Image (cartoon, rainbow, N blue to C red; front, side, top):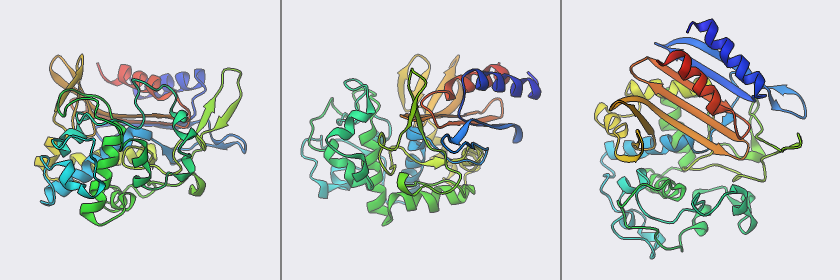
Length: 341
C-alpha cells in the first residue's frame, strides 16, 4: 500500500471511530504518517497535534525495564538478585524469598497485584478505599498489595502484574539514589531526545498535554482525573508524544540506552504467554512462523489507549496515542494491514 493510501485508510478509521489521538509511523526512518485527531481539551475545543503529550498507561513498563537493565549493566544488580535482599527494609513477609528481578520483569513472580484482572473489572474500584489523589510516589502503592499472599510460586507461570513493576521502581530508586521519574528523565528520555516526555501529575500538567476522557453510551463524557493515580509510576502513567515514542525505539536499537548484550537480553522472548505471543523484559514479542514479527508495548487506562511497535524485518515503527479508552488498536491494525504483509 502506498503512503497516501495508508494515510487515507487511517483517516477513514479515525473519523469513523471519532478518534482522539495522534499517529506516527516511519518506514526505514522516513516519515510515513504524522497526524492528529480530535481534542486534547474538549471543553475548550483545543485540538490534538502530533506534538501533544498523551498518557500511555502500562506502555511505559519498558522504560522501567530499561532502567533496571542499566543498573545491571553498571554492576549494581543482577537479574538473579533476590527481591527480599534488594528491598529488605520493606519486610515483605508474605512474599517468597525466591523472587528475583527476572521474575518481576517477566510477570512470573507470583506476587499479588493491586489491580488483578482475574478478579477485578473496573480500575476505578481501587480508589474507593485508597483515594487516587494520595498516589504520588511509588511507596504510596504498597498498601494496595504488600500484605496480601502469593498467588503462585515464582517462575510457575506468566500472570501480568503491575505491583511487580512498582517494586522494580523502588529498586531503581534505592540503587540509583534518584526518584524514579527523575531517573527515567535523565537516563532514558534524554539520551533519546525525548524532550517533551515525562511523568506529570494530573493537577500539574504542562501545556499541550491531552486530558483523558471516558465516554458513556449516551454520548456524554467525563475526564479521567478521578480514575487514575494523580501521578504515574514505574508500572505506568508516563506522558509521551507519538513521534518521541519512535525516538525511544531508535535510541534503544542504536544502543544509546544499553549495551548490545543487554539490549539483546531485554528483547529476548523470556516467557511464553499464548499462541505466538511472548514477553521479554517490559516488552511484548509477537512471532509469525517462529520468526519475530514485532516488539510492542501497549497501555489501557480509563481515558487512555496506546500501542507502539517495531517490525524489524520491515523497518517499520509506529506509535498510536489516544486520550480515550479505545481507538489505538484499530489504527495499529490498519497500519499493519497496509505496511506489513
